[in-house]
Length: 358
Ligand code: NAD
Ligand code: ZN
Image 1: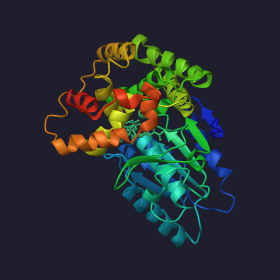
Image 2: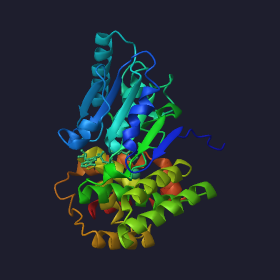
Image 3: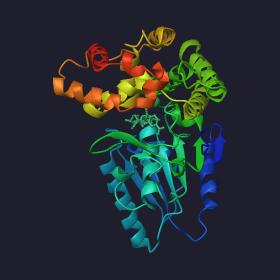
């Protein structure tokens, strides 16, 4: 069976296009329902705050992403929105808008889904478990690289697992890609999130699931990453934003690989964020991605990034075993990277060795 996948229906791109958000939302406000803005609290008190097109009845929620999104946090935010709607005498908001990096975009996706689906978000971690369409939802990225703006998943850490809510309903209805919004991100964070995109490309382009669709997007995204992180270019923010989009489209029709599987283990057990976890893992994967790792190290040098070392120093035996469990669940990632008989190559012992080297 070939995947029949849902894409974002509306995209606006360009420096300053954030100011069009007001008009885009006006078209949805047919009977005065509130719009919910979920904004990364890194912008609290910053100039962007004043530019959020809030009307009186709207709800501005500052979200905190010091920890990557948890199902418990999604449930809390959903309850907060429901209570605000009740107070306003409305059933549902006209829109949910996420303004921030991958974590904030994922929170906005998850809340828009949970407003129309009963129970806890943890009940829907998996594939195609969502029954009802989400509230109309919009993403405004302020970091580029995860591809969350185009993906059909929202990655959540639940009580038992780190796994996305994967469904056609998860996909944003509208994305607002304004390269000016990523300009102020701290250099190291910009690099780690940008490398998420670079690694998406390497894992997609070297994987066994590769096809012309994924290759077309992956090669373009890879070339943009090289321009941004190796060559340097005046319109780097524009290019990085498009790299993230194309990288996301590439993996939508293929899969990621060894690095992402290991990074999920780091995230679940040690709370290491996705971008930086990918970089720590990728640096140990020369055997699997020799050219990619070599080029990645050139990018580290060029961007003067010091990758954290010895992250396993204080990790217990149980924690390592749990990381291995989390990584091994991700069978499609291993199969994409190593082929159908991946289990012969990727034993618990080999995964342990890789983790211990980080
Ligand atoms: P992030 O959203 O976790 O943000 C990282 C840090 O940067 C936070 O402290 C945030 O407050 C800050 N920040 C964001 N934008 C900023 C700006 N412009 N200026 C200053 N600070 C800013 O980082 P990320 O790397 O974009 O996202 C990682 C998350 O995305 C993880 O939770 C991961 O699981 C998820 N993810 C999702 C998908 C998907 O398809 N849904 C894919 C990959 C990763
Ligand atoms: Zn990723």
